[in-house]
Image (cartoon, rainbow, N blue to C red; front, side, top):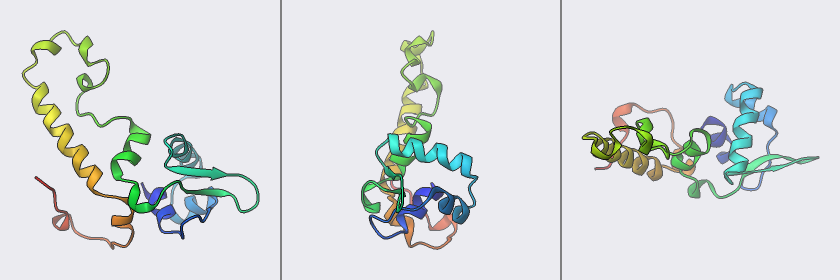
Length: 136
């Protein structure tokens, strides 16, 4: 997320070298390159090689939400393994009394992640957790 926030802080269309992002965000370069590859695959970042190359956001910072970034790295939001495509392999999947609760939690988390864009946090300073508003 820090690398994406850094790209969002640049002028639109500005390409930044991976080493610059890694240095400014205190992220190991090897880790950053893996993350950037996932962001490119997800269509969130554009990569360009050669002079003037590097990484840039594929869309405006206000158009990329936290859910997209998280899912590009972690996969779909899920709380328990049975919410994945293989969930039906669970022996009690059809009669599970908890699945509706986990689904409701997953949907609420996904909604909150969609509410926040890279642009919405770009200009914020550090705040306290009490300043975060969770929507019902």
